[in-house]
Length: 127
Image (tube, rainbow, N blue to C red; front, side, top):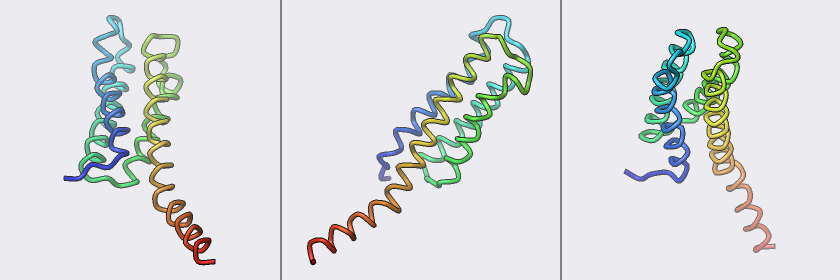
């Protein structure tokens, strides 16, 4: 199986997902809602990251982006603001969202910008 260069970003998202899954045990008095949110979000991100490493599809990154954004806003929507879990969710969400955006950009660049640049270079050589 040939690995894509961008698969490293999926590996980083998988690491973030593992931290999310372990997070409720790091907080002794974790809010039950926060614990469920972190575990479910971590499981979703882990599954998507593993799937992207095995058989990449752009929609996986869009869902990872949504999961990251969800983690950023979930403390306010689920009511666990001003807790350590809130800070953890925001930080992990920012990392996951950034990695997803970066991978989406790299895929866009590879499929849209690189062919156009090579065509322009070819035209310049001919002309």
